[in-house]
Image 1: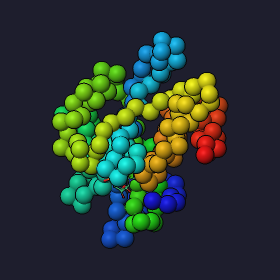
Image 2: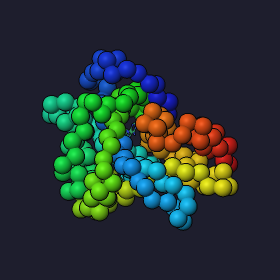
Image 3: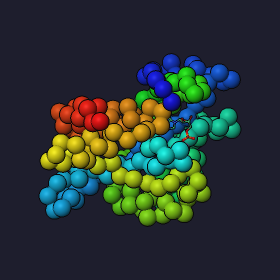
Image 4: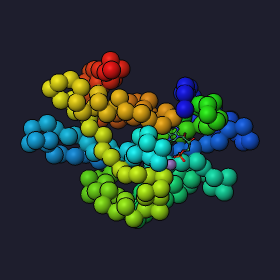
Amino acid sequence: MAESRSLSRVEALRLGPPDWKHACHALLYAPCPGRLFGKIPLRFAVLMQMRFDGRLGFPGGFVDPRDASLEEGLNRELHEELGPGATSLLVAERDYLSSHASERPQRVVAHFYAQRLSLEEFQTIEDRATQAKDHGLEVMGLVRVPLYTLRDGVGGLPAFLSNTFIGSAREQLVHALDTLQLVPGEQLQKAVTMAQKKP
Ligand code: AMP
Ligand code: MN
């Protein structure tokens, strides 16, 4: 998908069918005290997935006209994509972060949510993800986002941000890392700049 523009929830909800489809995705994260190589703080575990189309994205998907609300559609998609480890997960309106509208390849309004879990809850989702209905189909596997930058200035978050992302997923990720304070502002800015420079 090409360009997308950020819009408020109220503006986003004015874009209705049949012209616009609505999709919801969520960033799940947990505090993570471990250190890579016993040295580099991991800080948080942040969940993304490798999608069927080879792009990185967040779990979630299209809201169905049969879903009573955006959040009901989101929770249905999360259960399909993450499986039995996510049964007790319930993302709600208070977890809402942003909306983006894009016109190509089709008119989609993408709503974005974030929820903090305990590391134990996060690991239960990872452990059971291969039992999800969509595993090996729409979802090729879960990944954690490296939040650190290695000494070469590229390895870690900058290299991760140089991957190909679906829709607004890259903007959603950077915005969430900033507003949820998962990465210090200056370090995040450097990683974004370095990712743009990388050939
Ligand atoms: P999905 O069913 O997860 O592929 O998502 C439904 C629609 O939302 C597709 O048109 C995707 O292009 C789009 N999409 C998927 N993930 C995101 C995302 N993180 N941000 C914006 N749009 C997305
Ligand atoms: Mn999906």
